[in-house]
Length: 300
Image (cartoon, rainbow, N blue to C red; front, side, top):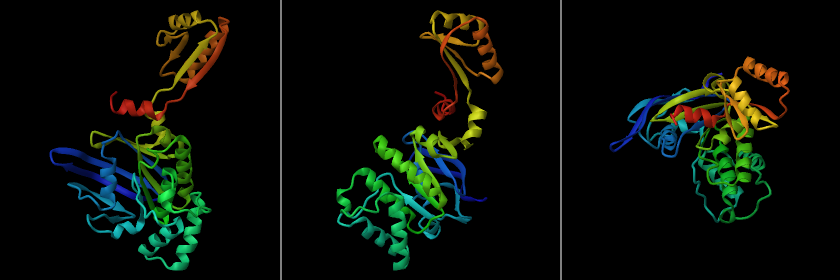
């Protein structure tokens, strides 16, 4: 399996502000890749560089093995792009708009009609006959994904696709992106970490103009984050007893938390509860999440 996108040492400044200071990452085939960073971290700058809209100050970008050149759209034949706020011709219907996009992409009429039907079904707009001007934000995002996939790209780039949506709309867009993996690799930027945990295979954390951490999510969890065990005794006073016996733990609000807990630590804790007849309401092994990892990476 090769990489559809490779970025090496990407640099970009605007005036005196250094936005990207050597971004390096790769996106494999058949992958959902989350590009995570705070607002203003440089995610959009990176994506616009990938599609040739911004001229980098240094570094290289290649898509499907071909080098990206500023101002040239040659490599964009491999790419579908959804900006954070997509714009449409409001007087058109979804089918009319996809017909236009297909023609711009150089597709023939029969292929456009067939592909449009497939995509409108994928994004849940197959029965929609209203003009785009009457669409909700979520419907526009769905249509935006359809237009980005019209020419069967190898790489689908989405810039903050769920940031302005309600919970239902976010879930719908994430499901669409996940289902699109059979057709393309998905590279999407976000600062919503729960979205990444929901659908992504791989992730890169952008901080200080560089990729601070990148890789398979499960491998990163094992390598960088700690697993904790939390116990809620039936009697709050028993939390103090646990804290006294397990000095590495801490008590709070009638609960006991043991951080960096190995499997052996969890077994010892359970054994102590049984031997001392401590009744519990809850015994929970807390798996690390991306929020904790991200806060660790950025030092907060």
